[in-house]
Length: 235
Image 1 (tube, rainbow, N blue to C red):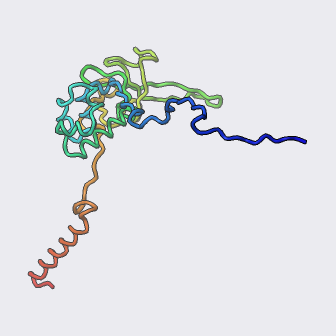
Image 2 (spheres, rainbow, N blue to C red):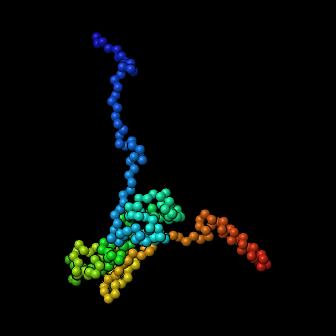
């Protein structure tokens, strides 16, 4: 016969205490985990605050003197921008949006230019290559738009001194076409310079006061038109 020992409960005050553990990293508050966004380095085409504000347009260039450094441009909060006098609020939102794009490397036209002169201008040239397939009797010519150091030709540059650019193409023999591309005088190639509003997102034109007031504005217009017709005896 097997005897079953009765189970006894241990009083609460006699129970061994469990060792305390620290909070797991995942339980830290969002404020503790939040890190300030990274500050992207300037690029050859966008070397300073004034150039950045000039490119994105909407009159933000007038505020360039309010940012003492490149780091300040990319670290100030919306509230701090308001204290600097960047108005209206949509201008601050637009600036914050472009700051985030720049952090992600989402540049506007010309943002991928690597060789830029001291005057802020970059030179584009046509690189011509030949490619012959197994069924081609005559080699095919491919033409690409490349960015080269100022005053240099394609023949004078090695492969590491040329970089392909987006948004420009070769038309005809060696004519470079694309936004803000001006032909070089007496030479084959084009010149691109940072220009006011070059990256600007154009705002849509509001008709009759925009979506919120459109119904009210058009209603008042119809009343005014009917009043004018009655005064002329046409109603």
